[in-house]
Length: 310
Image (tube, rainbow, N blue to C red):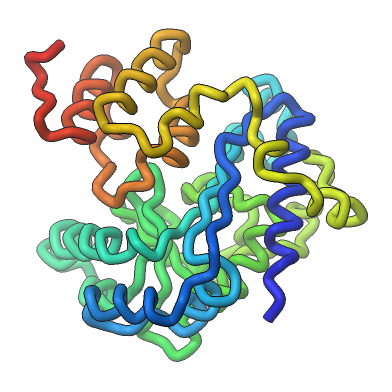
């Protein structure tokens, strides 16, 4: 299967976000996975990866990390039903992170579902997580059914818990890229999903309205395909690049310096996700407020940091 349209759509969305004074925090599409790499991860996890996900790893990319966010002025102009809901997008998976992501997903299922006798909890163990949502939720491939649909796991069992997002992994990415990979939080995806079993409707009038608002015109796909990641990542966010490959100590220094220049820590979340917190362990820092949030973040990214360091 030819997956090139996914890249073209994501590049066009990234270009449009920039023209709207938004921020493209990261635009990375890795190399295709070798069979030996996949088999190694499967051996470590103790089970085979879902078929379509495996196909995408080998035919498209073993890792992808593309994140963007609208400027506040754009959010203020957002039409219904996106206003106060859609603010950013993040498409991410990484072959080398899958073992950790699924370990922590299963811990969550055990603690928040099985131990509380939630109906259907045992079935959640037979799901495959490929993305940790910034709020602690997960995007899953449900291996309990032959078609292996993509579903949403809400750790607080909110409205969209268990919702089908796509009929299969490829079907999900095909539809998700048509709306710029909005989300992946449930409240951002909700306007594009009619009900619990429908999945993302990328052909709906609502999806068309979103594309019109962003200025996504399929006639410009080939033009956008020529753009490089360097041309797409917003230049004014150069501090973001220095996070990649640095030590945890340096990452923390860079992020806290940036936080001092901003009023809201939330505005950094997409960038941090893209460069630093593509780590399955990260959850607590986003659940706290103010100074406590920063303390939790510092403690989490490096165990040697303690609260009395502040």
